[in-house]
Length: 103
Image 1 (spheres, rainbow, N blue to C red):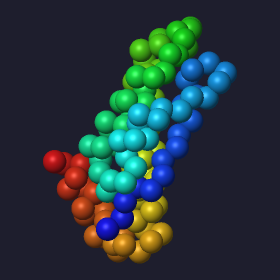
Image 2 (cartoon, helix red, strand yellow; image 1 turned 120 degrees about the horizontal axis):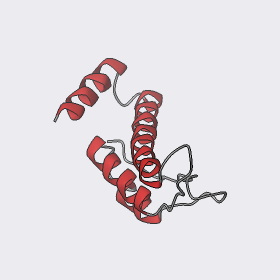
Image 3 (cartoon, rainbow, N blue to C red; image 1 turned 135 degrees about the vertical axis):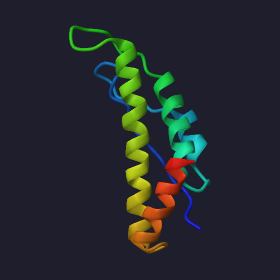
Image 4 (cartoon, one colour; image 1 turned 60 degrees about the vertical axis):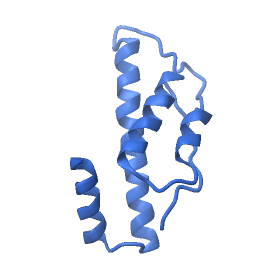
């Protein structure tokens, strides 16, 4: 079974300095990839951010975008890992992933 062995993301909404969320990483490492877990890790990671509001977007909006983009990045990484390792054929993985999204 495929498991998350490492996860490091640099969150770049904290001004000029990228930030890491070790709490978000801890939610994923050693566990099988799952959409709900990805969403939870993205939420935890975004809580650590302190973006600034400006004329382009509010701080709250930037946090919400960070959650969505963080979850999508993790989903994409899981897709690539499954396809690269050949753990499941693409068709089977897509079917399981769609089921996980609908649950």
